[in-house]
Length: 438
Image (cartoon, rainbow, N blue to C red):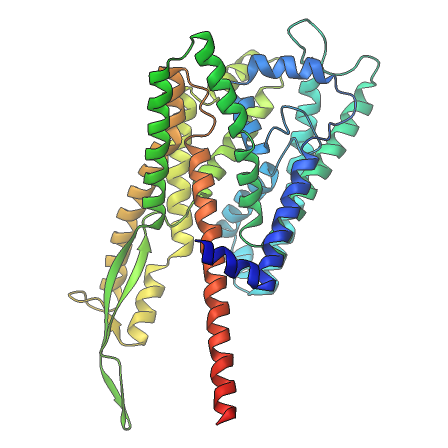
C-alpha cells in the first residue's frame, strides 16, 4: 500500500488530477456553508431538528448538510440527476434522440447540453417550491424561517436564482472533476456530501446512548451490520459471471489464428449505484413539491413518501428494479454481442452461434440483473428496518453505504488503471531506448 502511494506521488499527471479533484471538492464544501439571503438560521435549525428524521433528513444527507443550513447548494446535484434520468428515458423512446446518441462524441455533447438545460428548468421548479415552503416554515418557538420585512416575490426570486445557480455550479464542478480530475465527478460530489454526515451521526448515536434511548448492545449490533453490509457491497460490486467463449481455429496463408479459450465477464450489478441514486432523486422530487402545500390529500401522499414508510419502500424497490433492467439493457445488447462473437469465430460451448447465443446471453443477463436488483433493494431498505425496529439515526447505511463503497471502488479502480498504463508506457520507452543503443 505504501508503494502504491509512492507511485501516485511520483507520477506527475496522476498527482495533479488527484489534487485537482480534492480542491474542487473543497470548493463544493465551502459553498455548502454559504446561506441564501433572508433566512433566520436559528428558526431554520429548530425546524430541521424537529423534522430531520423524515424526507428532509434523507435529502439533506445527499446535499452534505447544505439543505439543513439552506445554503446556495441546498438543491445539491439532484436536479441534474433527475434531468439525466429524463434524458435517458427520452433517448430510449424518441428515435431522433436515439440516433443522436449514436453519432459519437458530437451526439454525446448535444445530449449533455440538453441535460444541462433540463437541470436549469428543474432547478427553477424545485427552487420555487422551496422558496414557497420556507415562507410557511417556523421554529419550535414560533419564529419564522424567513426574516420579517422580506418582500414575498423578491425573496422568491432571489431564492430561485441563488439555488438554481448553485446547482448549475455543482454540475460544472462535477463535469470538471470527470474531465480533469480522477473518478466520476457527480458521484464524488454525492460521496463527499454523504461522508460529511458521518461524524454528526456518530455524535448523535453517542448522545442517544448517554440519555438511555439506545443501548450499547444495539450500537455494537449496528456496528456489526455496517461491517457486514460493506463486505456484502464489496463482494457484489466486484463479482461477475464468466461466460466461457471458444474461438475456432482458422488458417490464413501460413498463419493460424484462433483456437484459444476466453470468457465474457458479466457483472451481477452492471448498473452500479445508478438505480438507488436515480430512485432517490425521483422520490425526492414529488415529495418536495407535496411538502410545500396545504392541500390535505397532497400532504397525505407526501407524508407516505418519506423514508421508513411502507409506500416509500415499495416504490423505492420498484424503481430500483426498473433502473437495474433499464441500464443493463442499455449497456448490453445480447444480439450485438452474439453477432460480434460469430464474426470473429467465437462461440459458447454447447450453444449454437447466432440467435441461440443471443437468447442464452439474454437469459443469463435477466437472472443476473434480477439478483443484482434484489441485492440493491435489500441494502437500500435496510436503514428503514433499523430505524423502525431499533430507533437508530442510521444515516450512513443502505443507499449511503452503497454509494460510498461503490464510488470508492470505482475511483480506486481508475487510479489502478492509470498506474498500470503509466507503468506500461514506461516499459515501452525503455525498450525503445535499449533498441537504439544496440
